[in-house]
Length: 338
Ligand SMILES: Nc1ncnc2c1ncn2[C@@H]1O[C@H](COP(=O)(O)OP(=O)(O)OP(=O)(O)O)[C@@H](O)[C@H]1O
Ligand SMILES: [Mg+2]
Image (tube, rainbow, N blue to C red; front, side, top):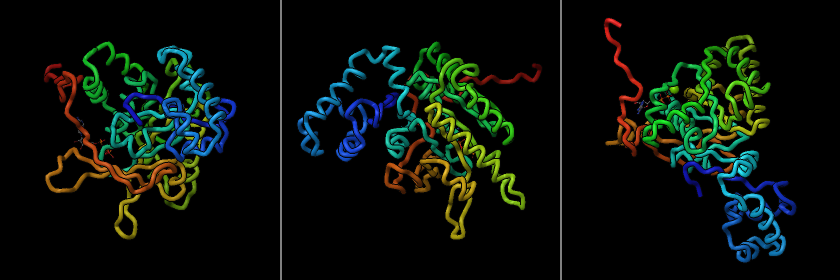
């Protein structure tokens, strides 16, 4: 169902007359979730399988076809229309997309948690690069631990295209904000909510907001006797939720991990934060013998769409496709004299 770079319009009530909650439910049971799925399906068979009226289904299909497929996909108006509804942004990592039921959903917060070096930041880079290059959409990347590497972003882009203008255009679409404490993060999120996401800051609307990491600025504020840390954490949560919903963007955050009483790895920031992300993925090193040091496992530990505790493997540094020269992107050796 997914292909890297696709933006899909989910079937939802109000999208067109006749597309009722019941019809959507019945279609979903037959795995028809997007306009694309519906348009590509055989209405007669589908009406039978879903036990819905053939006439009603054909009417809905006709309107959706007129709305979504009558113009070239490259038409700016159609694209705007597509993007104004819920879309799914591919992460650029096939196995991650499988866990996420196709990718990151706009309007929602998704969390990647894991220990040091498990690939949270690399995955954020992949998302940023994919949204900026494949989807040609803007990304707001909030870096709270100094982990952002422009050289690595370029390296990933070089693996997607050898066209340097395209690489630069994609980099232009990724806006980076560096904040190193929770107060700066809050004021930055408030500014984005007050309109910075639509205009000003990035010169166009943003489809993905990445915060790598939320725990870096929050975890040390928690605990102790004061509740200030908890209150700040919930303020960050509210800002992120409002940004996701009001601007219809996909929010991706990263979080550290701790261990519970049974020495099992669990996401950091505690119980209250655990309700904030709609979807949570736990990253770990793949520990089996002979596994490459770049191999990671991703487990779905919270989801409203897919069965939890499904697991996928992925490589943090897959072989390059283009003429990229891994390791050299943007790097410059410092001369002793300079
Ligand atoms: N080209 C590359 N550039 C950088 N790191 C790479 C590359 N290829 C693979 N890696 C691996 O990615 C890992 C780093 O992952 P990443 O920085 O995403 O971890 P993290 O989960 O964000 O950790 P932290 O919690 O410390 O921020 C390293 O083990 C590194 O070996
Ligand atoms: Mg990191």
